[in-house]
Amino acid sequence: MEVVRDCLNKVEEAFAKGEFKDVMKLATEGLEAAMSAEGRKEAIDALDGTREAAMAYINKGVQQEGHLDTLLNEAHLFLLRSQSQLNSTKDEEDVAVAVEGAIEDVKQASSLFAYLADDEGAIQSSYWLGIAQTHYGRALHRAKRSEDASDVLQSALEALQESFSAARSLKEGDRSDRINAVIRCAEGEVAFVLLSLAQIGVDEHLRAFMQGEAVDFDELDTVEDDLNTARDLLESELKRSSENETQSRLASCFCSLGTVKMLLGDTDESMKMLTEGKRLFSLVGDANGEKRAEGLMKNVEVIKKTLES
Picture 1 (tube, helix red, strand yellow):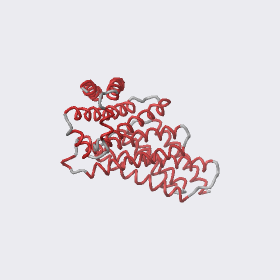
Picture 2: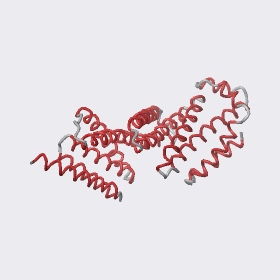
Picture 3: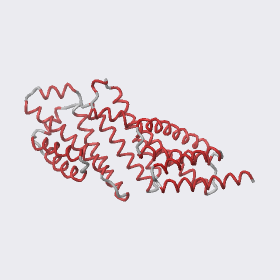
Picture 4: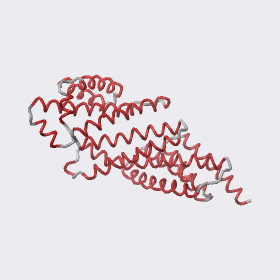
């Protein structure tokens, strides 16, 4: 038990320093110790996901309380290893593999928090599951697996919305810093998932348009609604924090909206959206984003000339 607790302390220290490779190594060692710990199976068998069962088990003695502490530490080790896998992933080719591992870890944490009737842990798990699934969905989209990407991103959206709703339902005095962080960040992540889902639809419609196929205006209206919701959330997020990541996401949102307007034939509004997207990309120093916006603007100019001729 002491071994697992000491390992968790070291993991938290390494995580705070951003030493994610050390976190994964130490967390793996701690998890091996936790899962072979005496009393683990006994504790799990005694729990049913209610506080009553957890308290009844604790009341049996100090040893039983130690067993539950070990389970709780195990859950946090899974959660921290999951976050570190996401934070340490740089190479796009390795994203899908790393994120699959992160998703599995956060599901393990979620299961343990559920056994322990730990509401705060469950909220954190739901939030980080949504984050991991967002990464995975975007990796699938890059791999041209649009249908799979949409399914995963939809699951991510549900997990993030669930975490936000559950966090908000707690009384302010009962909210830890971690829960307040979920409340602070979840809406921005929901916006990012909506943006990611909409971008899949935009890409598919743009490809069909370029191939001379008919545009499904009803589907485009739905995509536009998602993008407008994402824009509202991101603009609200930007008022609280002017981080480059938020501005970059908002830039992508404007470019996607500009593309939708182009496909709907509203070239003037399209140019406004794309110009704003390019401006935001320029602010964060994203040259590739600027080039993408410029390329779309050229397409709009061609369409506008065609319509006017």
